[in-house]
Image 1 (cartoon, rainbow, N blue to C red):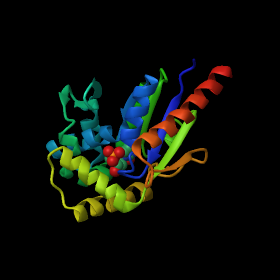
Image 2: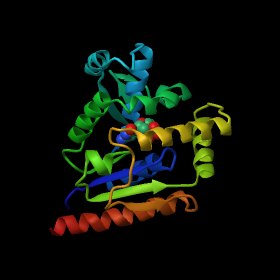
Image 3: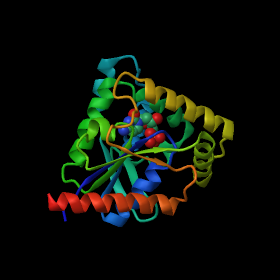
Image 4: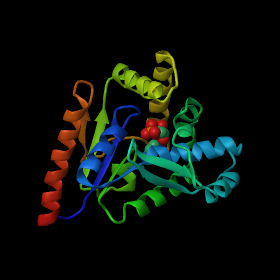
Length: 229
Ligand code: DC
């Protein structure tokens, strides 16, 4: 069977990562969380006090950043920044509050997109993010665009944070999601938008398992047609 590329885009906290992770596990594909890459860059910038308005400093810093993923049987994949696991650190609010800003920087996007394309070279990949179907893999066989109501997204994100021992007020979660939606959709460099050939999945009222089943069904049908071609 031919291996395909599955691109999942959408707003923050719509269930992209959890769906992508599960679908990848079922298909035996690699899962890449592109948002984790922008988060790792943000963490590096925070820790090294990189000025977001100094392109020279940014380019130099990007040369020092090496991001990798390792499969973790418990919760999918762990993100590593220069050999150290940063999985927990990149999910904290201080990173969430700055990541959308960092993601607007052209030099950052160019560096990340190049790495993401390299990761997808062998195909058999599920990647989630904001520009995967539009910029990173415009020829992906399956493109999905996930949406959900704000209240549902905020509850889910708050629960995710609680599971990681972080107590965050629901209003603060909503505010952060709103700000990120705003920055992600209005930035000049590859803003979040639905690819013309993407299939919209609204996760507001469907159970997680149903969501996964639907994506697997769509993927299998694309795999069959790609193998016939
Ligand atoms: O998926 P996430 O919420 O972890 O992503 C964090 C931020 O990274 C998000 O606010 C926007 C940015 N991002 C991006 O600009 N492009 C991507 N492909 C993935 C994430």
